[in-house]
Image 1 (cartoon, rainbow, N blue to C red):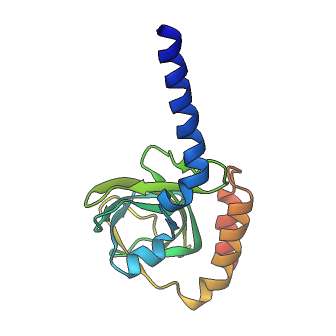
Image 2 (cartoon, rainbow, N blue to C red):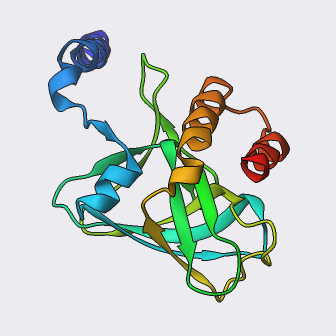
Length: 183
């Protein structure tokens, strides 16, 4: 009897694993770009500085306004421009992670994402870079709004996004910051 139960459990586990591979396409949640989800109102952002000018420099909360979970690509294609409400630096975010730095990977794929549960807030951190060398670092009292990427940063932001995605996990904070300041 015990062997039959173990065999039954093994078969269920096996079928579960192949059903994910075979049938997973219809059950998978599409991975989306944060900029698109902010623009169409599916997600709202509340963010502020943490005193840093580059790297994990912007903390925030994303609210999923939808009845279903949303997966957000860790790599922010073309970047997200964060306009500072105060006198500090505006920032260009290129990656997003959960507040503790975690993210998820889709099995059988190289896709990296964070997940936003329906009608809930999720604490996040942005890997972001200073767009205004002459201004002070953004403080935790300064908040950010997402606005369209200024034309002067569009080309370099696209190049940075692609390079950072192709070299995921490599510490690129200094070269990316320098590239933005030179643009």
